[in-house]
Length: 465
Image (cartoon, rainbow, N blue to C red; front, top):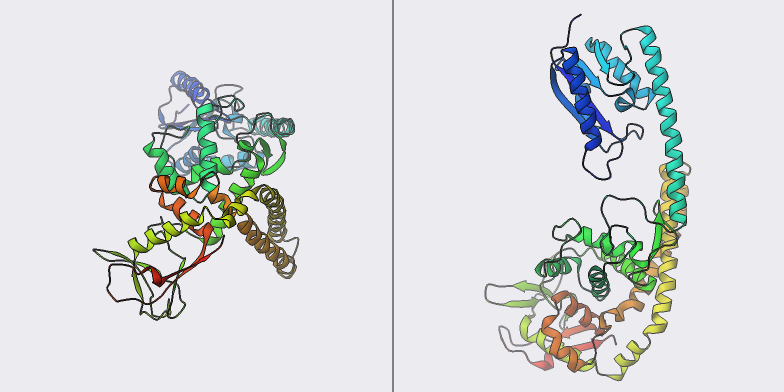
């Protein structure tokens, strides 16, 4: 009997939580022994580790092996067991079609060998494939039911890597990381950007659980994860309290989510470089002033042209203006109006919590409508008719939530004198958030063109608080 000139070894395991690849390694070793006993030459080993053959998800190495068989690069297959090759009858038929088209006759299994070259062997293989599919379906149902039960009990989901803030059991807190999460959550709702906080963590030598520097998406995932608020999520839905203690309270968690959503709406992505961007108005035409950097100076200018449509006749040097507005704001922080606003935070927090919950419900409704339209249960006209009023309510809730939570930037700052001493230690995002909390707008009157000094009489501040 002939032997293949270049056989393929295929190995697969569905779950490798330890990430060590020991299961597939044993399969490969047993296939090598079988190849040696048969006198087959092995041309390539194809290994899909931690990939299910029942889920239907692509298996890169399996697909590569099929392509090599179809092209004639490989003319034999060695597998530990048929269920390592596939657990889906349809996929078995596809495999058999590839073998038949390529005239591959050499297929052997280490355990429970099956002869795919005969009618009886094919019948046995198909029966084995059907049994494997049934076993996988039953196992999938048991696993899903167990996962739901664990979620309902508030127990953590199995994972290969611990969550930041928790030990390997995903329940016990790590005090040093817990303190970092609380600090970052407060800084985030106070107006600091994810980018600047990642830079700060990198400067302090604080790494993620992977041991690498933080990135904005990974930090966003940690701060938005309901697990840090002691909530258990299953299939994207919060189903109850978790078995572990919360790191932050639910009110702060909702404010974090609201801040993330508000920044999605604003579309701001580039790092801030000017303190007063968006707050300044031209005293001649009323248009917004824009930042403009020269080689030797920073300025805010009124820009003309089709994109800005300002008068183009007003310029103010940035450093003295930023210092003047900062001094005004720090003095304002000690005013009775601001003290009253901060004192009323307790009621605002309760209202913000209720609004955030209502906003989450409305967004869930939008997701449901999109799913109904995507699966053709409703047509476009029905989808648009139902969507428009919900989107209107979402926008209204977002505006109300933004108004209520704007004093977050002032939390824990103390008096104006205290903040004045600590101002330089705050990054530009936090400084800008504090000013935007206090200031509604700043109108700049015309002045002497080209002057480097600033006449305070040119600056008219409209206070929000």
